[in-house]
Structures are given as C-alpha cells and as structure tokens.
Length: 245
Image: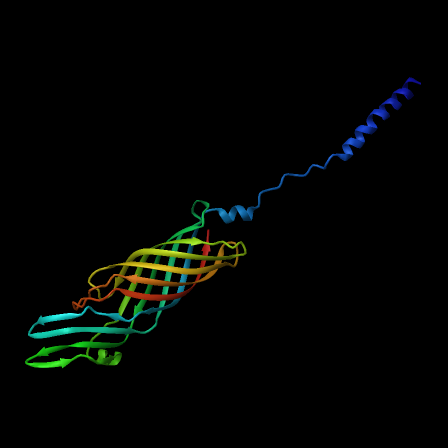
C-alpha cells in the first residue's frame, strides 16, 4: 500500500511540472552571422582592366606676338582638332577600406592623341611681306610638310572613390584622382587631375563588370618645338572588368 500511495503522490507532483515544461518555448540554436554580410564589409584588394575611347577637346597654343629670327608674329596661334582615340588602362587598389565605402587605387591609362586638323590665326611678317595664317590645314597636309603633332599620352594616377552599395549587386560610384601626365613630345611631365562617375555590377562574389565616364585635366604643356599649349581637357568612356581578393 505504501508503494501505491508513493506512486500516486509522485504522479500528482510531476503532472503539473510536465505541463509547465510543455508550455516553455522551445530552445533554438543561436543564429550564425551571415557570411555574405560579413564579407561584403571586409576590406579587399582589387585589380581591373579598362577599355574605351578618349576624346581630346580642341587645344589652343598660346597666342604669340614678337620677333624671332627676322620674323615678326602678331597674335599668332594654332588650334588643334583631335580624332577620337582608343584608350586602355589598368588599376589596382583596396576597396572597403576600414569597412567603409571608400576605395583607393593606383591607375595607368594610355591613349594616342591624333590630330585631325589644325587651324591658324594671326599674321607673321617676313622680308617686308605680311602673311595671314587664318587657314585650316588637314592632317595629310601636316604629314606632307613633315610636321607630327600626334602624341602618345600616359596618365599615372592615384584615384579615390566613394561606392554606393545598393545591396543587389549594383554599385554606383563617384571618384577623383591626381597624378602626372607623360606626353610624348612635351618637355616635362605635367600635373593631371580627373573626376569620374561609374557603376559596377557583381557577376559573382569576386568578379564584377562596370562602366565609367571620366573627365581629365592636364596642365598646359610646352612641346619640344617651343610651343606652349593651353590646359588639356579630355573625356573618356570605358568598360571595366575586375576581380576582388
């Protein structure tokens, strides 16, 4: 009888405890932080290639007045019109610096500025005669006269960008850069600045495609013939492909 009474008391005590336990919320395993979110914020090395077209704006020489070697120049200058040029480049740097949207890169961009035509203005006097230089000379005419005003141009830049991560693989950005321009027939390297707008799209977690437009400014060079030029402006449109590590 004691055993029966003990079993009955035990059942009466344990039943409410069992019901209370059933009412408790089930324990769930702690969530593992998303690797995609963590990786998207981690600093990464990147390298990209660039192909596109560059258009150098019409470029004036400085206006010259004076006498050299018996020739007197009056308000004499030339304006060069350029053909669109194939452009290429490469850039490498760090993205998401300190987990921020800031990106820094070292870049090289190259193209050949090819003269389409040259237009003169002003006059020069020689041996008592005055000649009007207000005429347009074609590329072929310049070549036949042995004059070559084409220049290979290399831009060596340090660029900074601010990326706007939209969270769906698309990443618009704005950028600016400073560096040096190496111009084939210029006496010295010149200061170069640029500004850019672009967008990247993540094809995979490590590979992206993109496009950008860029405006470049180069301090007015002086060439090996002694001609001084105004500041150079060029617009560039490029397609890009890159990878992040």
